[in-house]
Image 1 (cartoon, rainbow, N blue to C red):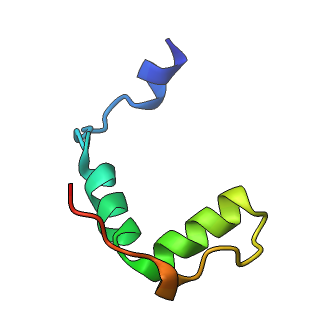
Image 2: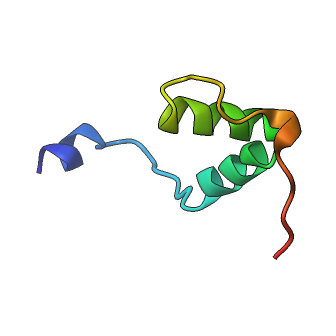
Length: 58
């Protein structure tokens, strides 16, 4: 009920799915992909290099 009161008077836009598109565009860049994977899986250590990434077409 508190959520309804805090949004009173404001129009809300539905943006479902737009974040996924932006994420896919960014992760399609090898530098960004390598940074995200290294940060999440390897505590920031450079285990994956951007120049070693290959694009896969499914």
